[in-house]
Length: 387
Image 1 (cartoon, rainbow, N blue to C red):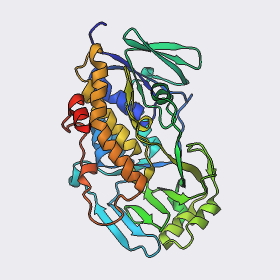
Image 2 (image 1 turned 45 degrees about the vertical axis):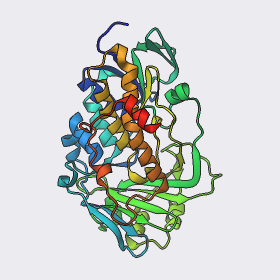
Image 3 (image 1 turned 30 degrees about the vertical axis):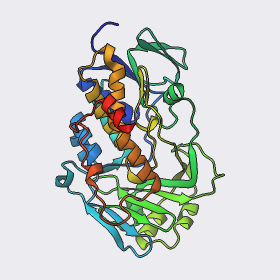
Image 4 (image 1 turned 30 degrees about the horizontal axis):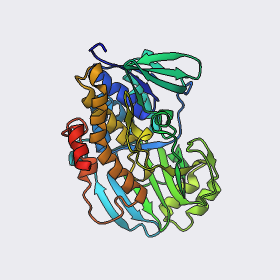
């Protein structure tokens, strides 16, 4: 195999796929991104970029663009569902962890990441149907009959990852009987009402709701919930399924007036099942490696799904910096050794839904993490420790 900078095909143009395209280009890796959708849609959802991920966005070069439109909450606020009593509040000025806490519309983050990439490297309407590793490279086959070759492949194709299924085998999602409602809507529908300038999670006995602004001028409001629902309610992990706003309001009967104000103002909502998967035994197979939700999908309870995929992008780029075609498999193993312990820990805490529920647990390991500069371990030494 000829030495030199590798060419890498990225499957999926979501947050993780675009972020890793940007970080790899910074270390001189040639990338092309293949996305099955024929166009990008403005999906109605908010997203939180806490300091651990906004620090990566700074390195990619999109932080300033986002700060012009994103809402910067005063704090990470946790309140009792009915009385409004504060369980725990963590003020989050930029000085606390050296990077900002930003809340925004998901589409604004996607647009910012998309804007730093050359348009010619992003290929839409490319649904992956097969991968063939041979002769030191990978051939990708798409549903439209086309094929491309690359030195390696990064599967950033989300919870329904075909890349994962090809290299690991099919895995069934776990439905623990919980569903989520969500909506982004015009804050003026609250008729002059306002919420606190924080990212607030309201903790009920068996359900919760998270509410925050998604625009710097506080013109847009977002909420996302977790509610028990019989396990026989089945839906795909789709963000486009419509929910019944009357059912949603009924599910939060008796909650604090601030929550009720938000839900009464909400004109419509979406609903989806919260599904989980167990941590994977491995993230790579030869010259194919997984990233983000494809390898460590998690519940939304810590706001770390997209964040950890963005962290992945920075660490994977560091592992590939200076690596030629002959050393790709070792770089992928090193990336997994450095990322898997952290993402497995976050997966477990998020699944239990205990984060910031009270007490004074240390948050610096999560929000103070610096993917650009954290010391990297060797894959072999990490495997030895794990065994």
